[in-house]
Image (cartoon, rainbow, N blue to C red):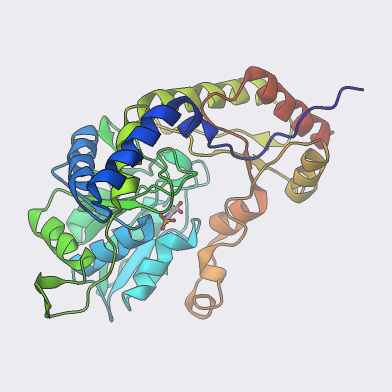
Length: 370
Ligand SMILES: Cc1ncc(COP(=O)(O)O)c(C=O)c1O
Protein backbone atom coordinates (compact mmCIF):
# COMPACT_ATOMS: atom_id res chain seq x y z
CA UNK A 1 0.00 0.00 0.00
CA UNK A 2 1.33 3.46 -0.91
CA UNK A 3 1.21 5.95 1.91
CA UNK A 4 0.51 9.55 0.98
CA UNK A 5 1.66 12.50 3.02
CA UNK A 6 -1.13 14.25 4.87
CA UNK A 7 -2.84 17.26 3.31
CA UNK A 8 -2.95 20.07 5.87
CA UNK A 9 -5.89 22.49 6.01
CA UNK A 10 -3.56 25.35 5.08
CA UNK A 11 -0.07 25.72 3.64
CA UNK A 12 1.52 29.14 3.28
CA UNK A 13 4.84 28.05 1.76
CA UNK A 14 3.87 29.56 -1.65
CA UNK A 15 4.23 33.01 -0.03
CA UNK A 16 7.86 32.31 0.83
CA UNK A 17 9.66 29.53 -1.03
CA UNK A 18 9.53 30.83 -4.62
CA UNK A 19 10.36 34.36 -3.38
CA UNK A 20 13.02 33.50 -0.81
CA UNK A 21 15.92 35.45 -2.38
CA UNK A 22 13.86 38.57 -2.90
CA UNK A 23 12.44 38.34 0.62
CA UNK A 24 15.90 37.95 2.17
CA UNK A 25 17.12 40.96 0.23
CA UNK A 26 14.13 43.04 1.34
CA UNK A 27 14.63 42.06 4.99
CA UNK A 28 18.37 42.73 4.77
CA UNK A 29 17.54 46.20 3.45
CA UNK A 30 15.60 46.96 6.62
CA UNK A 31 18.37 45.55 8.81
CA UNK A 32 20.78 47.90 7.06
CA UNK A 33 18.64 51.05 7.24
CA UNK A 34 17.48 50.10 10.77
CA UNK A 35 14.04 51.58 10.08
CA UNK A 36 12.39 48.87 12.12
CA UNK A 37 9.18 50.65 13.09
CA UNK A 38 7.33 52.68 10.41
CA UNK A 39 9.97 54.23 8.10
CA UNK A 40 10.51 54.13 4.34
CA UNK A 41 9.24 50.63 3.59
CA UNK A 42 6.03 51.27 5.51
CA UNK A 43 5.47 54.57 3.67
CA UNK A 44 6.18 52.91 0.31
CA UNK A 45 3.91 49.95 1.11
CA UNK A 46 1.08 52.29 2.13
CA UNK A 47 1.38 54.04 -1.23
CA UNK A 48 1.56 50.81 -3.23
CA UNK A 49 -1.38 49.17 -1.51
CA UNK A 50 -3.49 52.33 -1.75
CA UNK A 51 -2.87 52.28 -5.52
CA UNK A 52 -3.65 48.55 -5.71
CA UNK A 53 -6.91 48.97 -3.81
CA UNK A 54 -7.83 52.23 -5.54
CA UNK A 55 -8.28 54.08 -2.26
CA UNK A 56 -7.20 57.52 -1.15
CA UNK A 57 -5.67 56.69 2.25
CA UNK A 58 -4.01 53.55 3.64
CA UNK A 59 -2.51 53.36 7.13
CA UNK A 60 -0.24 50.46 8.17
CA UNK A 61 -0.99 49.04 11.61
CA UNK A 62 -0.21 46.12 13.88
CA UNK A 63 -3.18 43.92 12.99
CA UNK A 64 -6.61 43.70 11.43
CA UNK A 65 -8.13 43.89 14.90
CA UNK A 66 -6.36 47.21 15.46
CA UNK A 67 -7.51 48.45 12.04
CA UNK A 68 -11.12 48.08 13.20
CA UNK A 69 -10.44 49.43 16.70
CA UNK A 70 -8.64 52.54 15.47
CA UNK A 71 -11.25 53.17 12.73
CA UNK A 72 -14.04 53.03 15.34
CA UNK A 73 -12.00 55.30 17.61
CA UNK A 74 -11.34 57.78 14.79
CA UNK A 75 -15.11 57.96 14.23
CA UNK A 76 -15.63 58.61 17.95
CA UNK A 77 -17.66 55.45 18.39
CA UNK A 78 -17.66 54.40 22.05
CA UNK A 79 -19.81 53.94 25.16
CA UNK A 80 -23.55 54.24 24.52
CA UNK A 81 -23.15 53.54 20.79
CA UNK A 82 -24.28 50.41 18.97
CA UNK A 83 -22.53 48.80 16.03
CA UNK A 84 -24.40 46.21 13.97
CA UNK A 85 -22.25 43.31 12.88
CA UNK A 86 -22.20 39.65 11.93
CA UNK A 87 -22.35 36.89 14.54
CA UNK A 88 -20.72 34.50 12.10
CA UNK A 89 -17.12 35.65 12.08
CA UNK A 90 -13.79 35.59 13.90
CA UNK A 91 -13.81 37.23 17.33
CA UNK A 92 -11.45 39.90 15.94
CA UNK A 93 -14.44 41.52 14.22
CA UNK A 94 -16.38 41.99 17.44
CA UNK A 95 -13.62 42.55 20.01
CA UNK A 96 -12.83 46.05 18.66
CA UNK A 97 -16.44 47.17 19.22
CA UNK A 98 -16.34 46.02 22.83
CA UNK A 99 -12.80 47.35 23.37
CA UNK A 100 -14.15 50.78 22.40
CA UNK A 101 -16.88 50.39 25.05
CA UNK A 102 -19.58 50.30 22.37
CA UNK A 103 -22.19 47.53 22.07
CA UNK A 104 -22.10 44.97 19.29
CA UNK A 105 -25.59 44.23 18.00
CA UNK A 106 -25.80 41.05 15.96
CA UNK A 107 -27.93 40.67 12.86
CA UNK A 108 -28.42 37.36 11.05
CA UNK A 109 -26.62 36.16 7.94
CA UNK A 110 -27.71 35.28 4.43
CA UNK A 111 -27.51 31.47 4.35
CA UNK A 112 -26.22 31.49 0.76
CA UNK A 113 -23.13 33.64 1.36
CA UNK A 114 -22.69 33.48 5.17
CA UNK A 115 -22.55 37.29 5.16
CA UNK A 116 -24.72 39.91 6.90
CA UNK A 117 -28.28 39.99 5.63
CA UNK A 118 -29.42 43.56 4.89
CA UNK A 119 -33.02 42.97 6.03
CA UNK A 120 -31.84 41.62 9.37
CA UNK A 121 -29.55 44.65 9.70
CA UNK A 122 -32.49 46.97 9.02
CA UNK A 123 -34.45 45.34 11.86
CA UNK A 124 -31.53 45.84 14.26
CA UNK A 125 -31.17 49.61 13.72
CA UNK A 126 -32.04 51.73 16.78
CA UNK A 127 -31.51 55.42 17.62
CA UNK A 128 -28.17 54.39 19.21
CA UNK A 129 -26.79 52.72 16.09
CA UNK A 130 -23.70 54.50 14.79
CA UNK A 131 -22.21 52.03 12.32
CA UNK A 132 -22.73 48.88 10.30
CA UNK A 133 -19.73 46.57 10.32
CA UNK A 134 -20.10 43.82 7.69
CA UNK A 135 -17.53 41.07 7.19
CA UNK A 136 -16.38 39.89 3.77
CA UNK A 137 -16.29 36.32 5.01
CA UNK A 138 -14.18 33.68 3.28
CA UNK A 139 -13.25 36.17 0.52
CA UNK A 140 -16.48 37.68 -0.79
CA UNK A 141 -18.68 40.54 0.34
CA UNK A 142 -22.32 40.73 1.37
CA UNK A 143 -24.86 42.80 -0.62
CA UNK A 144 -22.80 45.93 0.00
CA UNK A 145 -25.04 48.26 -2.02
CA UNK A 146 -28.01 47.35 0.19
CA UNK A 147 -25.90 47.95 3.33
CA UNK A 148 -24.55 51.25 1.97
CA UNK A 149 -28.10 52.36 1.21
CA UNK A 150 -29.14 51.56 4.80
CA UNK A 151 -26.10 53.40 6.14
CA UNK A 152 -27.01 56.47 4.07
CA UNK A 153 -30.69 56.39 5.04
CA UNK A 154 -29.87 56.26 8.75
CA UNK A 155 -26.73 58.40 8.76
CA UNK A 156 -24.46 55.54 9.85
CA UNK A 157 -20.85 54.73 9.13
CA UNK A 158 -20.09 51.62 7.10
CA UNK A 159 -16.87 49.93 8.23
CA UNK A 160 -15.91 46.84 6.23
CA UNK A 161 -14.03 43.97 7.82
CA UNK A 162 -12.14 42.86 4.70
CA UNK A 163 -9.52 40.93 6.70
CA UNK A 164 -10.22 37.75 4.68
CA UNK A 165 -10.87 39.37 1.33
CA UNK A 166 -7.90 41.30 0.03
CA UNK A 167 -8.10 41.51 -3.77
CA UNK A 168 -11.79 40.54 -3.79
CA UNK A 169 -14.21 42.84 -5.60
CA UNK A 170 -17.79 44.01 -5.43
CA UNK A 171 -19.20 45.42 -8.66
CA UNK A 172 -15.68 46.35 -9.83
CA UNK A 173 -14.53 47.99 -6.56
CA UNK A 174 -12.03 46.30 -4.28
CA UNK A 175 -13.57 44.91 -1.10
CA UNK A 176 -12.72 47.08 1.88
CA UNK A 177 -13.02 50.29 -0.13
CA UNK A 178 -16.77 50.73 -0.50
CA UNK A 179 -17.60 52.31 2.85
CA UNK A 180 -16.11 54.82 5.28
CA UNK A 181 -13.29 52.51 6.33
CA UNK A 182 -11.96 49.06 5.55
CA UNK A 183 -9.80 46.77 7.66
CA UNK A 184 -7.26 44.23 6.39
CA UNK A 185 -5.18 41.64 8.23
CA UNK A 186 -1.79 40.41 7.09
CA UNK A 187 -1.71 37.48 9.52
CA UNK A 188 0.52 34.87 7.84
CA UNK A 189 -2.34 32.60 6.69
CA UNK A 190 -4.21 35.42 4.94
CA UNK A 191 -4.26 35.73 1.10
CA UNK A 192 -1.58 38.39 1.58
CA UNK A 193 0.36 37.53 4.71
CA UNK A 194 3.41 39.03 6.37
CA UNK A 195 6.04 37.37 8.57
CA UNK A 196 4.25 38.10 11.84
CA UNK A 197 1.30 40.33 12.67
CA UNK A 198 0.30 43.26 10.48
CA UNK A 199 -2.79 45.15 9.40
CA UNK A 200 -4.12 48.07 7.39
CA UNK A 201 -6.93 50.60 7.65
CA UNK A 202 -8.12 52.26 4.45
CA UNK A 203 -10.54 55.15 4.10
CA UNK A 204 -11.70 57.75 1.61
CA UNK A 205 -11.79 60.36 4.43
CA UNK A 206 -8.63 62.42 5.04
CA UNK A 207 -9.67 63.25 8.62
CA UNK A 208 -10.18 59.57 9.55
CA UNK A 209 -6.80 58.64 8.03
CA UNK A 210 -5.05 61.46 9.88
CA UNK A 211 -6.67 60.48 13.17
CA UNK A 212 -5.69 56.80 12.77
CA UNK A 213 -2.09 57.82 11.96
CA UNK A 214 -2.08 59.88 15.14
CA UNK A 215 -3.67 57.15 17.27
CA UNK A 216 -1.30 54.39 16.07
CA UNK A 217 1.67 56.25 17.51
CA UNK A 218 0.44 56.76 21.10
CA UNK A 219 -1.61 59.78 19.95
CA UNK A 220 1.62 61.75 20.21
CA UNK A 221 1.13 65.41 19.27
CA UNK A 222 4.79 66.38 19.58
CA UNK A 223 7.68 64.69 21.31
CA UNK A 224 6.48 63.74 24.81
CA UNK A 225 3.15 65.55 24.45
CA UNK A 226 -0.10 63.51 24.46
CA UNK A 227 -3.64 64.79 24.87
CA UNK A 228 -5.63 61.54 24.70
CA UNK A 229 -5.17 57.78 24.94
CA UNK A 230 -3.67 56.23 21.86
CA UNK A 231 -2.20 52.88 20.89
CA UNK A 232 1.12 51.33 20.00
CA UNK A 233 -0.03 49.98 16.63
CA UNK A 234 2.68 50.79 14.10
CA UNK A 235 3.50 48.50 11.21
CA UNK A 236 7.10 47.23 11.32
CA UNK A 237 9.59 47.93 8.55
CA UNK A 238 10.38 44.24 8.05
CA UNK A 239 6.68 43.39 7.68
CA UNK A 240 6.20 46.18 5.13
CA UNK A 241 9.27 45.02 3.18
CA UNK A 242 7.87 41.46 3.06
CA UNK A 243 4.45 42.73 2.04
CA UNK A 244 5.92 44.85 -0.78
CA UNK A 245 7.51 41.73 -2.29
CA UNK A 246 4.38 39.62 -1.92
CA UNK A 247 1.82 42.23 -3.04
CA UNK A 248 3.11 41.86 -6.61
CA UNK A 249 1.93 38.22 -6.56
CA UNK A 250 -1.43 38.68 -4.89
CA UNK A 251 -3.56 38.77 -8.05
CA UNK A 252 -1.95 35.62 -9.45
CA UNK A 253 -2.35 33.86 -6.09
CA UNK A 254 -6.03 34.85 -5.89
CA UNK A 255 -6.63 33.65 -9.46
CA UNK A 256 -5.09 30.32 -8.55
CA UNK A 257 -7.33 30.07 -5.48
CA UNK A 258 -10.27 30.52 -7.87
CA UNK A 259 -8.96 27.62 -9.97
CA UNK A 260 -8.86 25.36 -6.91
CA UNK A 261 -12.35 26.48 -5.85
CA UNK A 262 -13.80 25.89 -9.33
CA UNK A 263 -12.29 22.40 -9.41
CA UNK A 264 -13.75 21.51 -5.99
CA UNK A 265 -17.16 22.84 -7.04
CA UNK A 266 -17.03 20.83 -10.26
CA UNK A 267 -16.04 17.61 -8.47
CA UNK A 268 -18.54 18.07 -5.64
CA UNK A 269 -21.52 19.10 -7.76
CA UNK A 270 -24.50 16.83 -7.05
CA UNK A 271 -22.87 15.18 -4.01
CA UNK A 272 -25.83 14.37 -1.75
CA UNK A 273 -25.65 16.23 1.58
CA UNK A 274 -22.92 18.65 0.43
CA UNK A 275 -23.56 22.29 -0.61
CA UNK A 276 -20.74 24.09 -2.39
CA UNK A 277 -20.07 27.87 -2.06
CA UNK A 278 -22.35 30.35 -3.81
CA UNK A 279 -20.58 33.28 -5.47
CA UNK A 280 -22.67 36.47 -5.41
CA UNK A 281 -23.33 37.92 -8.83
CA UNK A 282 -21.47 41.18 -8.30
CA UNK A 283 -18.49 39.56 -6.56
CA UNK A 284 -14.96 38.51 -7.35
CA UNK A 285 -14.58 35.88 -4.62
CA UNK A 286 -10.94 35.34 -3.62
CA UNK A 287 -11.53 32.14 -1.66
CA UNK A 288 -9.56 32.76 1.47
CA UNK A 289 -11.58 29.70 2.46
CA UNK A 290 -13.46 27.17 0.37
CA UNK A 291 -16.32 26.37 2.71
CA UNK A 292 -19.00 23.78 2.13
CA UNK A 293 -22.06 22.88 4.17
CA UNK A 294 -22.70 19.35 5.34
CA UNK A 295 -26.32 18.72 6.19
CA UNK A 296 -28.09 16.50 8.73
CA UNK A 297 -25.71 16.90 11.68
CA UNK A 298 -22.98 14.88 9.99
CA UNK A 299 -20.29 17.57 9.75
CA UNK A 300 -18.16 16.56 12.76
CA UNK A 301 -18.21 12.90 11.85
CA UNK A 302 -17.21 13.73 8.24
CA UNK A 303 -14.36 15.91 9.49
CA UNK A 304 -13.06 13.05 11.66
CA UNK A 305 -13.35 10.57 8.82
CA UNK A 306 -11.38 12.87 6.51
CA UNK A 307 -8.71 13.38 9.18
CA UNK A 308 -8.33 9.60 9.45
CA UNK A 309 -7.72 9.56 5.68
CA UNK A 310 -4.96 12.17 6.13
CA UNK A 311 -6.99 15.16 4.91
CA UNK A 312 -7.17 18.25 7.10
CA UNK A 313 -10.17 20.58 7.27
CA UNK A 314 -11.27 23.43 9.54
CA UNK A 315 -14.44 24.76 11.11
CA UNK A 316 -14.73 28.51 10.63
CA UNK A 317 -16.51 29.16 13.00
CA UNK A 318 -17.64 26.71 15.68
CA UNK A 319 -19.50 29.27 17.85
CA UNK A 320 -21.61 32.24 16.77
CA UNK A 321 -20.45 35.42 18.49
CA UNK A 322 -23.84 36.17 20.08
CA UNK A 323 -23.55 32.98 22.13
CA UNK A 324 -20.21 33.91 23.73
CA UNK A 325 -20.52 34.46 27.49
CA UNK A 326 -20.12 38.25 27.30
CA UNK A 327 -22.88 38.71 24.71
CA UNK A 328 -25.40 35.88 25.19
CA UNK A 329 -27.54 37.56 27.85
CA UNK A 330 -28.57 40.32 25.46
CA UNK A 331 -28.74 38.39 22.21
CA UNK A 332 -31.79 37.31 20.30
CA UNK A 333 -31.75 33.97 18.44
CA UNK A 334 -30.08 34.16 15.04
CA UNK A 335 -31.07 30.89 13.39
CA UNK A 336 -29.04 31.13 10.20
CA UNK A 337 -25.79 31.91 12.03
CA UNK A 338 -26.47 29.11 14.50
CA UNK A 339 -27.20 26.63 11.70
CA UNK A 340 -24.04 27.67 9.82
CA UNK A 341 -21.82 26.94 12.83
CA UNK A 342 -23.16 23.36 12.82
CA UNK A 343 -22.74 22.78 9.10
CA UNK A 344 -19.66 24.54 7.72
CA UNK A 345 -16.43 22.81 6.81
CA UNK A 346 -13.49 24.53 5.10
CA UNK A 347 -11.43 22.35 2.76
CA UNK A 348 -7.69 22.78 2.10
CA UNK A 349 -7.04 25.67 -0.28
CA UNK A 350 -3.95 27.62 -1.28
CA UNK A 351 -2.38 28.80 -4.52
CA UNK A 352 -0.56 25.95 -6.19
CA UNK A 353 -2.63 23.17 -4.59
CA UNK A 354 -2.19 20.35 -7.09
CA UNK A 355 -5.02 18.57 -8.82
CA UNK A 356 -3.86 15.29 -7.30
CA UNK A 357 -4.38 16.71 -3.81
CA UNK A 358 -7.75 18.21 -4.75
CA UNK A 359 -8.85 14.77 -5.97
CA UNK A 360 -7.68 13.19 -2.71
CA UNK A 361 -9.62 15.72 -0.63
CA UNK A 362 -12.76 15.07 -2.68
CA UNK A 363 -12.32 11.33 -2.48
CA UNK A 364 -11.92 11.47 1.31
CA UNK A 365 -14.99 13.69 1.60
CA UNK A 366 -17.17 11.53 -0.63
CA UNK A 367 -16.11 8.39 1.14
CA UNK A 368 -16.92 10.04 4.50
CA UNK A 369 -20.38 10.93 3.19
CA UNK A 370 -21.23 7.33 2.20
C1 LIG B 1 -12.83 38.29 9.67
C2 LIG B 1 -11.63 38.69 10.47
N1 LIG B 1 -11.69 39.82 11.21
C3 LIG B 1 -10.65 40.24 11.93
C4 LIG B 1 -9.47 39.54 11.96
C5 LIG B 1 -8.37 40.04 12.83
O1 LIG B 1 -7.16 40.20 12.18
P1 LIG B 1 -5.78 40.10 13.00
O2 LIG B 1 -5.57 38.67 13.33
O3 LIG B 1 -4.77 40.65 12.06
O4 LIG B 1 -5.95 40.95 14.20
C6 LIG B 1 -9.35 38.36 11.21
C7 LIG B 1 -8.13 37.54 11.12
O5 LIG B 1 -7.45 37.06 11.89
C8 LIG B 1 -10.47 37.92 10.46
O6 LIG B 1 -10.42 36.78 9.74
